[in-house]
Amino acid sequence: MRSLLLPRSRLSSLEGEQTALRRLGNVNVGPLAAAFLLSLIGLATVASASAEQAESLLARQALWVLVGLAALAVALLFDYHWLVEAAPMFYGLGLVALVLVLVLGHEAGGARSWFAFGPVRVQPSEFHKIATVLLLARYLSRHDRPFLGLRQIAVAAVLTVVPMGLIALERDLGGAAMFLPMLAAMLLVAGVRLRLLVAASLLGLVLAFGLWSFGMKDYQRQRVRTFLAPEEDPLGAGYQVRQSKIAVGSGQWTGRGYGQGTQSQLRFLPERQTDFVMAVLAEEWGFLGVITVLGLFAWFISTAARIAMRSRDRAGILLVVGLLAVVVTHVVYNTAMVVGLLPITGIPLPFISYGGSFMLFNYLAASLVLNVDYRRYVNR
Image 1 (tube, rainbow, N blue to C red):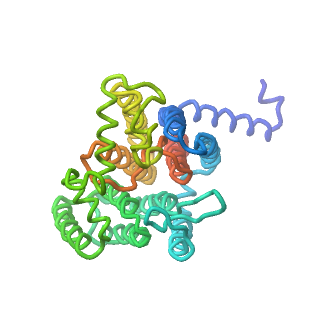
Image 2 (image 1 turned 30 degrees about the horizontal axis):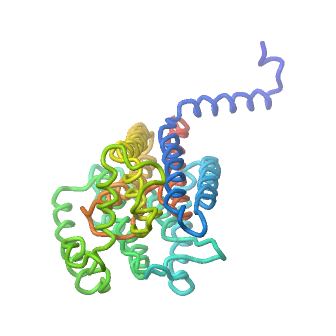
Image 3 (image 1 turned 90 degrees about the horizontal axis):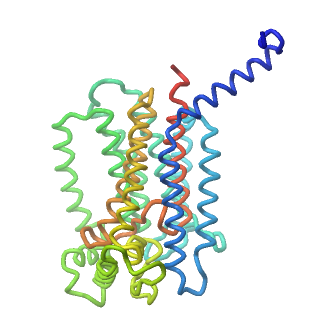
């Protein structure tokens, strides 16, 4: 009866709103909830890590979290199918930014990776991760055979290696390396034969040898040597990992208490608000605090994986898998790095480490994951 009394345009609008609400109610909000809780922990940890500095970094980090949440909301308004189709444009603009940063970029920590706009620094490589994932999802989703051919794999590899090379020229080998798990995960999901995986592994070993011999600076090779034998230079190159291990070990089960960590508060621990933020957290909150953070990451990863598994199209699955591979690699590498299991490089911890560009990447990645879940019934 109500439909007879309402104009057709108004009825269509109501049906559209009801459909949108039903779809929104079916979205798995686990990734968003986990990301927000991790950000709150990050805010507290960054505040403690920077408490002894002339300027606390809490206000800036809180601003970046708010900007990230706003970016997440805006990105949800765009259908991810459209974003995938527009991927060549994003990818091309990203390459232009990576080239420009080599010429006009701000240098810090031995790397020229940022554009500086007053007190604000923007790192284009973080956003190019998203552009590359979108382009790979677009390309690989158009090949619906059980296994990819050698040509398709080669094209996907070239699309990944080009930005990797530019980022490596910025002397940010850690950032460049994050593209490899993205490519590997997306190729595995798209379908790769075992013999090609073996061949790729052998090629990777050859490239690694070439990188060590010709592509790495002396200080980068020294980081690897320090990882293998930090005791050989305890006050030089081995200083960071030794202080990080001390911080993690001194936390024991429950930690020293918030703001009571000697390694961070007395400034023994370098880069404590960025690369070694997990060491600060471990010293102040102990094993229980670390397990809580890792549990939140497990919640984010598991719910995002479920979203990928119930996605209705190949592009959506590949998109979530590629983004999730980057996040997982950051978590695993950063956590292993602070306890000396992997060489030290500039790999921050998602949603927790201080930094604007990386925070925006994290929230945009979470937005795209939610986007896939929200629109999984569109073409049903």
